[in-house]
Amino acid sequence: MIEFVVGAKGSGKTKKMIDMANDELITTKGDILFINDRDRYRVTVDTKIRFINTEEFGIKGEDQLYGFISGVLASNYDVSTVYLDNLLRILNADGPEQLEGTLERLDKLNKQQDVKFVLSVSCEEDNLPENLKKYM
Image (cartoon, rainbow, N blue to C red; front, side, top):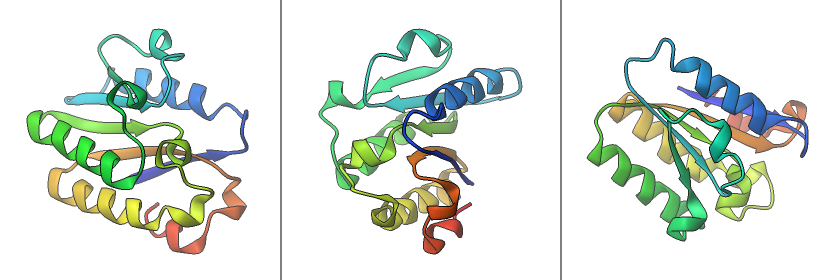
């Protein structure tokens, strides 16, 4: 499953995702990853959640992000949920219309590894391209 947390820049998407991840700790039987491109939120994510700052690993773009996530999943079969915050910025994408390739790859990982992905995208829900809504 792929979930989207959408909204304009500054609308509270990151805070919502952190709350979702922290709340999920109560019910999950697996590990949770929270991937962001800044360290700023590390202290608000529960320490039981693996916080990953993409800048620390030099991750920019679809291929690098996909390879990194694949590597993490290959080394830890217990990952149940991956939160990807600031997806457009990590991918260096101009808008949500450029996400289809990434979503195809994440959908494939979801089906192969039974991992849920929660993605934040700076875009109003009404402006989310139709071809991306099929992943919701």
